[in-house]
Amino acid sequence: MSYNYKCIKQRLFDESIGDYITYGIEITEENIIVNDVSCNREKVNEIVRLINMHQVSPIHLYEVIENLIGA
Image (tube, rainbow, N blue to C red; front, side, top):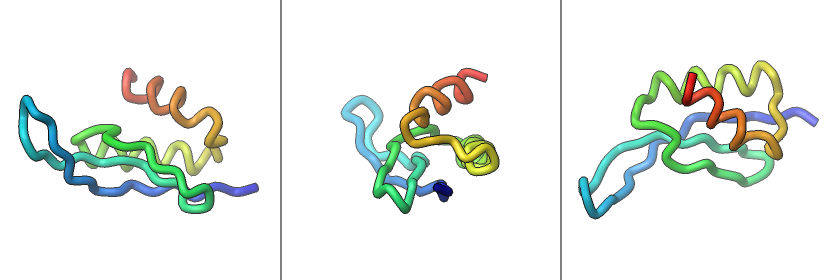
């Protein structure tokens, strides 16, 4: 099975900072969204490029994102 991940823009609210723009990752085939990955669009686009290139399974997505954010 092939997965198609994409970066999505999100407008969220946090009591301590108010409204803010952030970016998440959506897997269209699985109807899964990982919210608020980063406020840095370029960083999320790079993560999306890597997980699409390596066809990361949705089962491992959170772990891979965590590892890449820390990188």
